[in-house]
Image 1 (cartoon, one colour):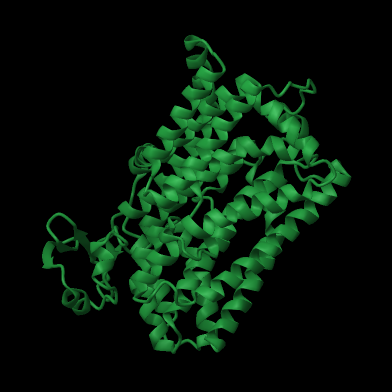
Image 2 (cartoon, one colour; image 1 turned 45 degrees about the vertical axis):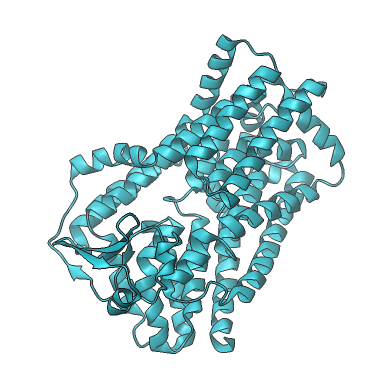
Length: 498
């Protein structure tokens, strides 16, 4: 029994894919009709498994279908995915997925997730180049000296800044790039790697969970619910501040304990392995020359440009990936790396994150099986049916937990919004609460389960640092319980004061 080890992230996801494949044999198949806006033809297309119907792009069409969304939200591109049409769920002939579909699912997932996979690989190449110059070691040495005696500032600063990115423009997948960069900084500050993982991942999680102006969750969900996105905004801002305070306090408590006694670290048995992985075991001080400063400036500028591009210029994965590729080339030129050495180093750096890229693809394969097996909409239908006739105080809490469960099957925040909100939002009317309560339940439920959701980003994030999922669960479960109780109390209070 002592030789038994917790399975790797890839194995966990394949086990989940196998279980979901079995679900397609048990869970009834079903589908909602969907409505998609065709920008070129300026028409709606109503799609069912039986037929496609072209409808005029008018407000009357939306009202006829009981969709409470202004027409301009479609025409100006705020809603860019097909949405589910309320009251159109139909149970269909079962479509169970077999062994062959299970085997194909990781490959299909990798193909579907090619955009983020290429982003991860190019970032790996960039990190390989910057590491080879010595700029990283020099910069970390300088930062460690600057923060000596004030290392706790690092926890507050990193968690808060990443949470700000999450709440404003949905900083999530992009945080994969930050782990190789920031983990060495936390190690230099005499914390363990879990502190760095927590600051980055929980910062993103809390930010997206308490989104305020995030177009990929708050705004698109409010639009799909038929309300203004500013409805409930003050409450979400307060929730962001309180949740962020709780998380930072939790991380700092653990960090203080580890700094005082490294043996208290949950990953103490990996201390040497992780320090070797991130170069922290090398005690040789690298002189921080002007050339290294310039290389590090270009490296940092890549991330600033990425954030500006995503938040202000409608950039997405192609533009982000191109930014990091150009950054790697510029650093190679500044550091006068030979062309053949540049290519070899870049490829080695990319290969270091290949495992992470595969995890992302396998996770996407799980959603492929659910979609092909026609069970995602069935889960949504029965979940919405559960809340019929509930007391409004119970409704808010149950809706939050339902969204937590649904996020396993639909981990994408924008996908969850457009698929579920037209169905779930009208349920608020039946129990006498505002539809912003359902938007909050969607955000908070999705955010809470995101802490541990294996079909989300946590397994990919842990893989970058070579930390097992079991050790993350040991670290995060007390905080998750605290946050769940706190969130349910907040939701209940909001029902009675809104």
